[in-house]
Length: 154
Image: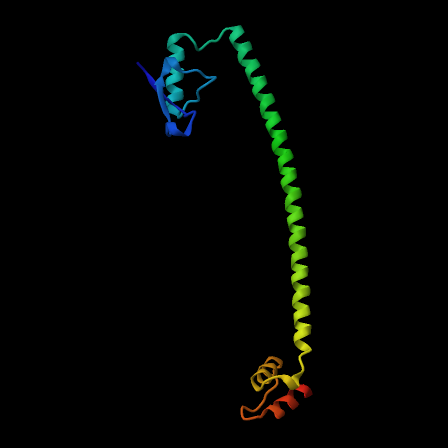
């Protein structure tokens, strides 16, 4: 008895299922590999099933037309879904741009508020950091009044 491997109909069946070649039904089964396809052709040639009759050919043709219709419907569904995904992606990009704009606005606002700090109320360390940030040289022994004069003059 000749056996062939077919693709499983459920994940729990593993990578393939072994059946008798005589039990193969092309409407239910799909050969797993080339060896199984070759065994099916050999069985069909030996058993006389290689040359289908006209009604069998018509039935196969009808099945192919039905399958083509199903595939066309599926293609339409996938194209519609792709359009929806494109629209969603565009919406997300617009939101991302709006978020980036808002983040920049908030950063600018924070910088403006930081710039409005009264230098006279700053500590010596803050004055040194501000002068360093502006690239103004100062003596490490300078007192707060000297640092404040350098900062307001810069």
